[in-house]
Image 1 (cartoon, rainbow, N blue to C red):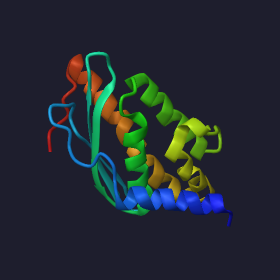
Image 2: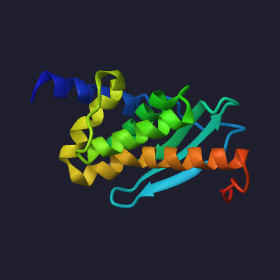
Image 3: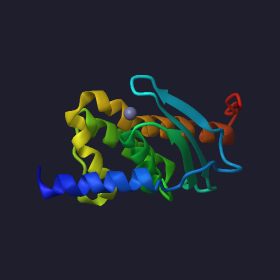
Length: 154
Ligand code: ZN
């Protein structure tokens, strides 16, 4: 294994053991709960858009394997402060990368540490869980700004 693999392993372990942006956002859109049945990973994602449509705050709670939780932590850091449309574009690009249909760039930072997951198809759902939750949470927050956005509270 190359030293790059070792570096990426260390990045994932760091996010897993010291998750960023953990918790629940108060006063944001409805929280989104998702589960990855193939592994048992769970995530609750909440976020708040500012008036300009940027992701002002995003937080997650969850349990599961290191890939799912590290991916959630990296996701929150990657999209915080970004316009919602840009965050959704990144989610699309990340998922395309895991299907082998796109490449990440050095500007994607810690996200690069998840590139190796595409070699393990059973783990891809672990890595995409948080990003699927992001897409739903953005849609829910945008819907709330419009109409009929509030999902059933849990
Ligand atoms: Zn998992």
